[in-house]
Amino acid sequence: MKDYRVEPGQKVDLKAWRPAETSQFDGDKEQAKKKIAELNTKLDQLQEMLYAEHKHRLLVILQGMDTSGKDGVIRAVFEGVNPQGVKVASFKAPTPVELDHDYLWRVHPHVPGRGEIVIFNRSHYEDVLVVRVHNLVPPAIWKRRYDHINAFEQMLADEGVTILKFFLHISPEEQKERLLARLEEPAKRWKFNPGDLEERKLWPAYQEAYEEVLSRTSQKKAPWYIIPSDKKWYRNLVIAGILVETLENLKMQYPASIKENEINQYRQLLAAA
Ligand code: AMP
Ligand code: MG
Image (cartoon, rainbow, N blue to C red):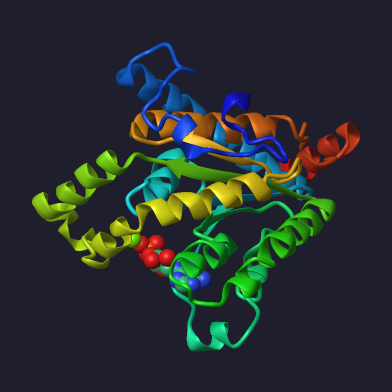
């Protein structure tokens, strides 16, 4: 999975990253689904240990173009994980109160505490993506933000937050298919937003904005992964794999528990109760 990680300082040209590739898995879609189910179970166990140990914190950031599958990843990758153990924070267009503050103000309260996993569905990166593409603030202002964001995430990492950032990379052709499906399938129609067609026209500007994000904000302790996302099963498989590997590498342990002689004592108390 290292193949998909952007190394610090690596210059990203998205045209060189293929959204439809599936090279890290030998099997077909059905085999991938079995593998994802296994990873779901592992993730559930790892989440429980994370909660029990009350030491580590995991922040997962999801970014991608419309229809790239941010909601789909949350549903598929965390299927079977205790709903009490995972929080999702979704960042939409800022409210007037949020706009009255700095752009990290609304984000910081949602970062995970000890024992928690938090998923950001969009994030502070919107403040150098949509904000840049739509000229919502002057260039001089958004251009400073890469440094702020790196410092903010470095601070979180220094304080013990494990950060993973996933860019769900799709092709414009795949987006067209998915937008069409939203029109054609009655159960998906509610998701169709005519505004997405306007955004689609800005595809090249968004790709350029993403390239700058990926090139400038992938840090050792807060890496970006570019996830080939034209195939949903592959996208889910790769992300689930990276999450499980990352949590396993934390070498977590259940907290020090009651001693053997105490267990006997409690057994006797319970027997007498
Ligand atoms: P969705 O994720 O489809 O529910 O859409 C959320 C919308 O909110 C997207 O169009 C984002 O670009 C927009 N959004 C999120 N953060 C910001 C921001 N900081 N400034 C402007 N628009 C934003
Ligand atoms: Mg949308």
